[in-house]
Image (tube, rainbow, N blue to C red):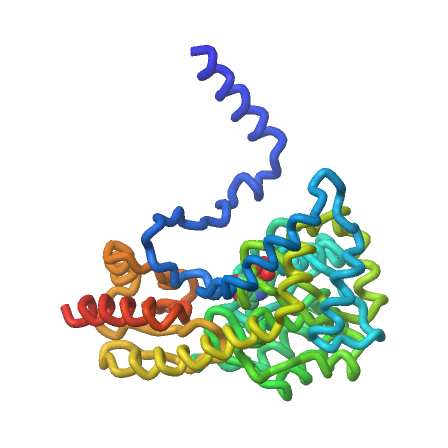
Length: 369
Ligand SMILES: Cc1ncc(COP(=O)(O)O)c(C=O)c1O
């Protein structure tokens, strides 16, 4: 009884004080995963490090003092990134607790009641969510039916809304394609605000926007280590002109990158060839998987430059296929209902060859019925 009263009192205060638009939101849902499930839903790298590398990493972690705050500026880590990814001294680096945090910081830096975030749709859901969190105006411009960027619609939206921030994911999630540099340049040239080239999947693609930094003052490049095997460490990074990054940095909470993440990513970058080896394997397996999936005549598979494949079921309810596949021990993502262009679409992360075989076997059984 007492606890019922307390609950009611809490509800009343929440209703009174929490922003009504926040009360109307739904928290980002991540499904709880059973141990034995083959997880092909979240664009993770399925590989562990070789055992000698694992051991060397554990040895390195013994030098870490968890009683001390981390290096707030990540100075050593910055140097490791500069060397591993050949980042010129002309540009600054800024780390986030995943690139999710960087999206939030970028948006906070430009937020205002009449400020707009623009992105093509469907794309990474966090752009819209963060615009909502910050009570910004969000404008989503539909991609073409082949998922190409509708440049004239984007240019029109730039003229109408004068967006403070434009997000272009290249390759795009969940469609897996690249929009192409020429189109991206036209957007950057038309925009007065900042254009963020989100290269979360750059390791699986030949596209690379780094050289855009030399040509434009309104571009930053955003990348992450999540897709190359370090999703659990949460490390995203921005590369950009110091003027932009110095402002964004003011909004970063101190110590956002913890000691274990700093030490582990610095260690991983010393073994960057191993990370590249794994991504090359994933790219080769993606092509094999695409070929095998394309052989199902009731499934359409799009080409991909990322570590996942987007497919459409032509005779089945995709959400139902996703549920039945999970019951058979394979978790993929159903995108049905998330955007009109994604009707009956499924997104499948490329797993190990063994995992891909299980997926193909179970999916074959479901698509045959
Ligand atoms: C396009 C894109 N950008 C950014 C992210 C966020 O990555 P993280 O926060 O793990 O660095 C994702 C994750 O799926 C993504 O697909």
